[in-house]
Length: 480
Image 1: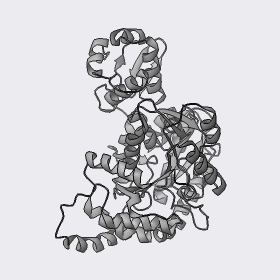
Image 2: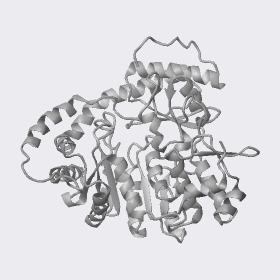
Image 3: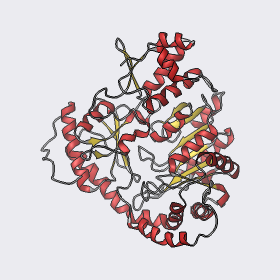
């Protein structure tokens, strides 16, 4: 169904009431309308000139806003057929790029779809159940206080501080803010530091949830290679100071790379000299395979570093406990924002996290061999059935960054979904619009599930137009 310019203008409301370039403000409001379903998939949007005239702005403003949303995969622009909201206009497999953080892949409606898109432990580990058994009696001893802790319960803040101190970064509990997972941490940081139109430096590719958090605040995303290579030259030669820089320094999502110690030192020093807050996403930092050395945290090299952590990848995604480690002034600022947002997190979950944190390194070491075995199995199955695919090994984390020999990740992801496997196309992880020839898949699933998933991917690749697989066996009978 087409949407007229007047109707769209009504839905946009006071879209221009903010700071920053008009095209980013317009894109931010349109993004919200798409994500909240007010502009359903398949809706035809007004032509550039028509909407510009209705909104009393230059055509370039509308063109730039449309191009931004097209880059994000939220709209599709085709010469001769106009501009439409991305996604199918009739029932069928849902698109993989038109929802924030790919919500439909977090809560699938089809039980037969194998999810190789969202990487996290598949079930609660025994250590989590034991931690609850220990924490619940402590909850029964609480006789005062209303349970609101906007900065986090003091015992958990102390446990996180001890966690960093053990890793060589002296930390006081007042330098820690507890959040509902790493995603809320990124959202709070975006809200605190990013103004509409402000520049945020990100890696290309990077974690898509971070891109969503920054886009939600109408940031202008500027990309650098993985590791923020070229950061020093960027801040030295460009007159406008970035408001924030973000990277995943250890077991990078999605490539799995680890930033060497010397590069960490130089990056932290450059960020401090340029007065650019540097956010290091450490959610995957503890997931090294056995025998792999991991450099010190990026925060060990400079006070400008803001560390984000979480238990979602190392313990279980359903334990929504994360944190931010930063200077006290930053934590105080974030705590005020947090208080307005939700007054604090789940008290009982924080008690459980307090039990888990002292043994986090041991828990991750105990699971390292199993994670590496699944990594090796998935690579071996892909090499056997899809030998044309380039699948570099990693030394930790949860994901593989796969390069397709031809075609693009977006269209192949749709083919794979029709064959019962959900993967992430690379373009959704690249704010520069690159990485189109890549897909991201994880190796967290059970071995039988990984084997079946590769069979389905091989069948999907043959349908897509790839070379027929050699001696591809039939699917195994299994419960998914």
